Image 1 (cartoon, rainbow over the protein chains, first blue to last red):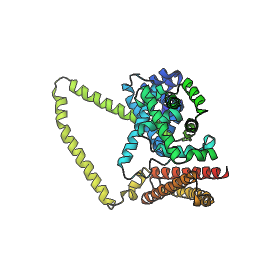
Image 2: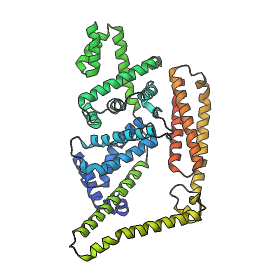
Image 3: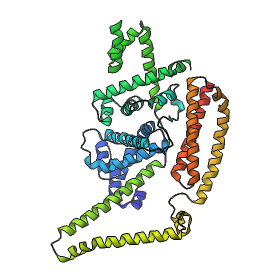
Image 4: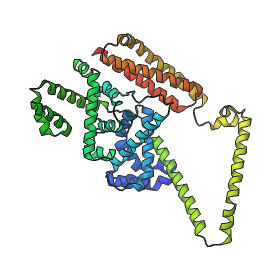
Length: 203
Length: 235
């Protein structure tokens, strides 16, 4: 790793090696990222990349676009670290950037007539986590308002607390609760109308 | 009764465990609230299954590369700014000022040279497909011909196996009586139409790696959907 970094990037080399040895907690992680330490960014990716990909894919509906969004988010984190004042935790700030990147992509997709991938396509590798209602929920999610969908995905799917979700969505905790409640209600109505609950009970 | 039903709404909204316990107690004697609560719980139980997880080994190297480029850009911008500030902070001698005076002219000359070179390249390449001619082929940022042929061959085998799976699923989807089956059918139709669009775009530009990645992702999704469908049918 050291050799690879030393050979490939002058810009990161010194801070990279030192950073690799020093990083212990999230403060160090933030500090490392601030200094442009590549191992700190790599650690950020290791700790949060999977969750970031999952959120992006649920918001955007396609794997390549989700991966592009995660990459964009990392670049924005890199560019914006100087402006991060610590009002929220570093990780929720990173997720906030990701969610905003996804919103931007959804908006530009709406403006573009060329996008081949409609937002309502629900993609998911099911595996052992599969549930009879999954497909129906994925389809119903596209009927939700942007922030309701994000609140549902963050709290119910990814397990963020309301405090974290409110920081990511830049709303109060009360608003985060209200958004989640509305999202669940609307999903419930959609699923009921589509007969999904009966089907899931039958299976 | 009416008050208790309202309290269910309040309990679901607040997520307070005490209120939820009281609501559950009430639901035992109220058919509507029981159904409401059971749907609510089913939705919450299903939510984690929407979490997505997949391996993407090339993603971190891509991000790493992008970060390096960004860092390089930032360093060159800051060194340019430092150079400019040094020039402006220099004592009011004649040398820096006269150098700055020539800057717009130098920029115009550079622009003219670039435009002329571009025109020359365009004319010599026949005008239409400069990427397929002479030295420019070596600068193609996308796939090479050999790589494209290899990708095509691998893709054909993969597509054949998915089509086999698709033929197995066809009779199950033909009727599509249940909402679940209709959902699968609709999703597969959407995937097929997206795949067709991507193929048309790739026919116009065989070397576009991004389109090819999207196509593979669509095929993978189709495979997963078909597998999931077959699993549903069996269960």
